[in-house]
Length: 528
Image 1: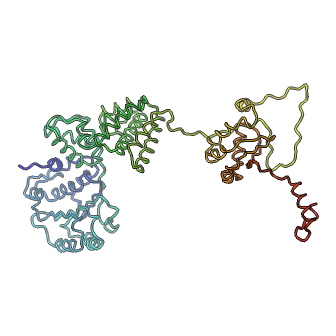
Image 2: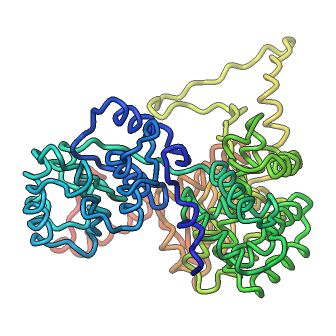
Image 3: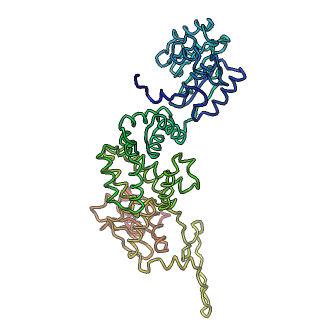
């Protein structure tokens, strides 16, 4: 006999064989037992979750001659004809290749005739969202009021593309994604039935790669069985699927925990040389640390991780080597690496750079809000312009002791002049994000004049001075000096060798010009 794929050999034949869709099975079984069948059903869900299989079981159950509770017997003539596809009363239509109005018009003509052998004429329309707008309009009236002997079963993966007028005329059932644990249990049953030896770790990898689809899981298992005649291991499954070995992911996390960059680069090099995609490598690493985060946060992570108990214990054991905050920081870094790889022409290099950062002490640092300490000097409000004479303490009275926080802030500040604090001021600019200003003033030198500071640029750097000579930059530099020294300092950008003329001298020059050239230069007498 010709070999048949596993997903066809082990396709459920009764409602009891359905995996992961108990809520739908319960509703359909009750309808069959009570005889309260709907005239139109809509089965929605992702691929491989059992929509078409359920439709076929339902089509046999409503027509079975020897119904077993709510399950078809699969042995009577009607059931056998439906199974082998020879029944003229159960018609399956692929809407992806029959999208036109003419196909639906043919259905409208056929529904008027009663079934030949069965009790109901059942139309199963797969991928119904592929029908054209005209086809939906042609189906609408028939779907609203079909003959009593007709049942429509529509299946789709994209229900949002179906018109609301069609949705409102159907009983909708949503097929959920099958969990990895349920897929693994079913695959274990299939392996036992087909006498295939396989490790639990390999089953776990296959069920995870299936991504909620039972059909995909069986197809992957079928591929693994054809790959070897010996016991199937997780390493062989990873090699067949072209994914990163699960053990390699644990080794990477171990290297990150111990900051073993040399071993880490070696693992990446081996994975890439075996044909693994660096971007895919990062995505699996993200998923691995996500499992570590769950294992560190949840006492019983089995239900969330949906994997074998042995594999869950491995994650819990490795998660104990990290703090929860460090795992979160690592995940943030890995997501950043993944984005950079997408934009880089060399994803492998970006992965190696990112892993080097993971192994360094400079992991993602969440900056805490800066709380400014009260200054030890008097700072008058801007709105107050009047001079307030400070109080002179009585000689024989000891001055009040400053608060602890003020003393702490004063003790950390430099005791030298303004110029001595120039390097610390540049560091303060960088810390507050004023990188361009900090780079610009490095081309100048400070010159102290009392409580004033001139930032002097040489003549060849005058263009740089023009770029940063703005009020907001002066204010930022003054704030930086205040943070470092605790003093209010007026900052001014000047060019070396250029002397500014005082106001009084400038006014005198103008008066001399006015006397020599009275017809050209005029002066307001009140300004004298």
